Amino acid sequence: MENICEWHKCGEVGKFKAPQEKDNSRNFKLLCEKHIKLFNQSWNYFEGMSENEIGNFLKSDLTWHRPTQEFGSTDNFFNILWNNALSDKFKIFKNENFFAAENKKLSEKDKDAFQIMELNLTADWKAIQSKFKTLVKKFHPDRNSGNKKFEDKLKKITLAYSHLKNLMTVK
Image (cartoon, rainbow, N blue to C red; front, side, top):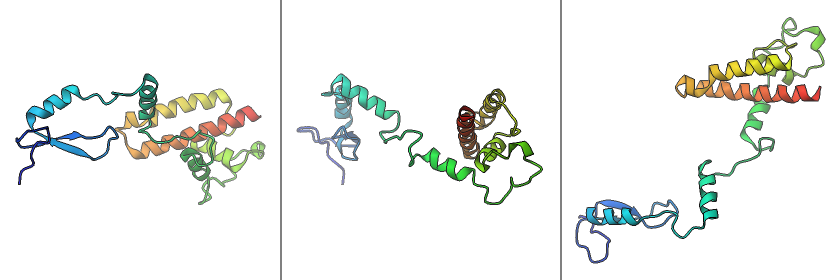
């Protein structure tokens, strides 16, 4: 059984989907080729919206219309990742030869951040910034065909950098 065009008083076969609402729902009507062309010529998604509403929609579209959180919020993905990324469950970084004796004031999280950034524990802020730029270029997903492994590594590096930045401003 063929679908009939839902345009007023049309008896042609309706093969083309046209949205019924502006809410991106799955509700649609079927139209013939002639009427889908007419529909597309007159369709304006933003019809009836104020400039402010259009601006808010476009701004929200940047995050796929999903809510965002401040970086420091407790339920932020990166905050959760950071709290778990630096846990040394396998005691890989417990080697006393690796950490210099004069850096005993550093917490395990601080030391792990230096390790993730591939830095010496005595690195200054300028060295940290320079290394961060190098690592971002090396592990950025755009330079690695969007490989998820590099994306995850870059997230850890970014979180380690943020931690060291906070550490440097506290001292």
